[in-house]
Amino acid sequence: MLRRLSARERDVVKELYADNPVMRMLTVPCQRMETRLEHLRPKREEVFVDVFCILDDFTGDICADGIECDALWFRMMNENREAFSAGPEDELETLTAHTLAAVVACLTACGSYPWDNYQAAVYRILQAHCADATILVDAFVVQAERLPDFRKQMKEYMDADISLADEVEGSFESLPDDVHIQEADGKAETGKNNQLACGDALAILYAMYLKSGGSRDCDARAFARFAEALTGYSSNYCRKFLNSMSEKYIDITKTKTKSNISKLLKDIGLNLR
Image (tube, rainbow, N blue to C red):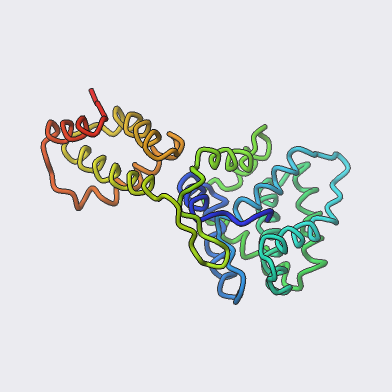
């Protein structure tokens, strides 16, 4: 990977792509990988981004006669060395192998030209550097086959003119620079966290509003825009965050009348119809 993701960036990826089939495919194999690593602590969300960086490179460089990917292993190893400074070589190889095995599983699901050429090329590279390549790829393929429409969704993505990797980077642009950032060594650098506190408080108010009879469909955007102004995060991210957190809070909030909640919201500057 080119760099580690901050804790907040991982949260963004997790919230936005929780239902993505590749993210779901990665869950079990990444958990198993973590048990094998004593020093490196790669997160599923980071592997997810790396997988799509590779896939997006392929979609932008289709070659009718196949693809020369021989340098891919060494490129990934070098990127992982930079991201995980002083990491043990065998653990860097394990991370690289898992990432490429996930790529092979995604390309296997596409099953047609030109993606079968890419699949064969990446599989060949993996086998050249990893003794357990077949077992590793099978572990990802098994997870993929358990997901409904995985093949259909992967083929649609690879045939479309879109880049999830670029989309992920775009979702980071609205993140404030001074929020709580988790460093690679596990130590926290704490900046201003009032944005996060505001988001949590608004999620509780949103849950109370819904429980009192408010409309999720009609008012979600208004809450999201208000949360965007308070926290600095994108409206799209705020809406997903509020919907997710309101489900957590809605069962523990006390029911109040809609008029009382609306008055409380108006007092803090959020006017609803």
